[in-house]
Image 1: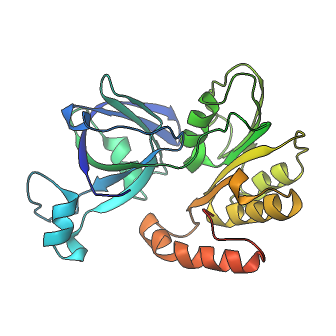
Image 2: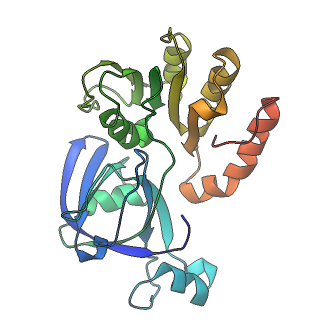
Image 3: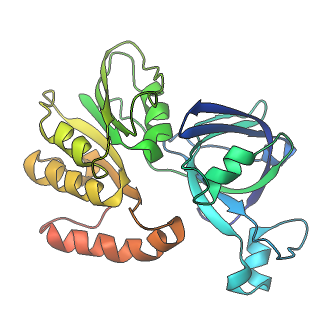
Length: 279
């Protein structure tokens, strides 16, 4: 993300999109200098203060990391910017919610207008290529905001196949693609392992002809399976792919980020002949 710049967002309103998805809209003058880039997967780091730690004001993450011991640093969680309106300014972020577990989900569930949150970013690397003959977008709930934003950025007349794994009926969201050949498949996870049904749906897919572009993000283990499939069986090159494990089953974000580089290194070793990329 380059230099650390701390923005401040104030909760304007919240909305329950489904049983497991909560939308929070942030605004205020603390976002006036925030600017999102051209990417449909633009993301930010949300900063959560540790209880019982007294932080210097104004709250500045760069200063905190210079002056306080590491065990007192605030926690960060990575989230896609679902939408940003600089005129407001207003930033929309959708949170996956699984009850009282975790950090960001419970915060979103309890958020009230006026609550403040520090924000770092943005980052990002993907946007639909208007020169691609077709687009493949695959993800679970963690990638749904980026997929929804990417669908909206598809060029007019685009050919796209979209697969989103959800916990069950009622978790579907309305996606708004431009006019074109866009098929959206909601894959019901039910009680199966994360990604199993999703991998089966994608590997059995008959892809359109021509040169495609794929966006595949979600739980790291099934992402690894689809990366291998797209590279080895579909013949897609790294330049055609945006692939990343947003999270890993059994790990929180802190644990996953600490282990991610080694996980990716092993993936690259397993997939002979590939260069390190974003997976």
